[in-house]
Length: 378
Image (spheres, rainbow, N blue to C red):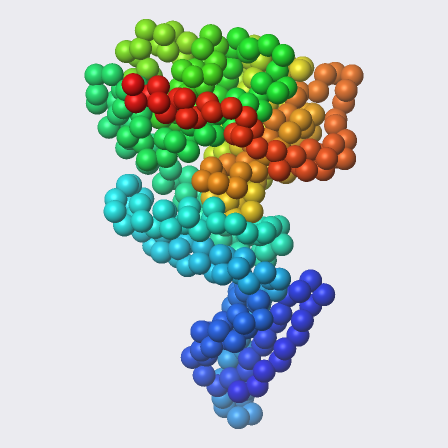
């Protein structure tokens, strides 16, 4: 068995093995290189026949990416292991096994780390893309399950806390409202939420606790999701009038977007960078000048769960603030303002400055979360 080792300038290690056997021990390579912060990116194998000796030699190419932080390396490896288990599931509907796997994944991805997915190998990035789509599908099934359950009660809004991530959404909604009020001089009269789904928790929480006179226009491409969502608020005399549901792809809405003071873009609208850019460019073209766009993104290991939005990609918007959570809340929040005609496209320098705001935590301002919890229990 012969080895050929080469390290590229981009910190990628290639180990090429020439052997007469195809049974090379991958685990031994992983264990040995793992001590030196190398992450296995890909393995390729090919057979070469040598007619002079009438033998077939296997050429195996291992590609490893160097990671400076051992803790980050462990996270990436464990995430990939969980992905392999999830990808083999035939059914992603809520069950003990499915719930356990995704709980492990969320716990892992919300642990402190300095991970930047942009520095991972292309192979790992492709795995992330596949995992995000699986997470999106599982999240949709989870929301559909609990929307059906909660909707079976006479007063569904009194049972919203049955959803296991209720308090995560409560904290996220409070965070988004606090950031919104920092940049809005007036309470929005018309608000659009794009990608509301069958369980529109954010719209319900904002309408109930924070924006009690705002009309919410919820957009989703699935008519069944909208029907279930409306069923949750139809019995409430107030929300049934202020919560409207539109079955439409937002990229097919043009003039209507000019009616909204604020537009929320859900994290799973646009499952990759290309799809996300298409939606953002459409909003930049049709939103009213000066209107606020609030987007959910991801940072660090949370980028294994949701697509990342780079503030520099928000052409046609002025980025106002960026917040990255360090608790059980998963989504980062970006607040931007639609540029007026004479503003043009904002400078990328503004984005880098705004990105430095990640240390700001509006959840420290007041005790709204605690007050709402007490009120809900009353």
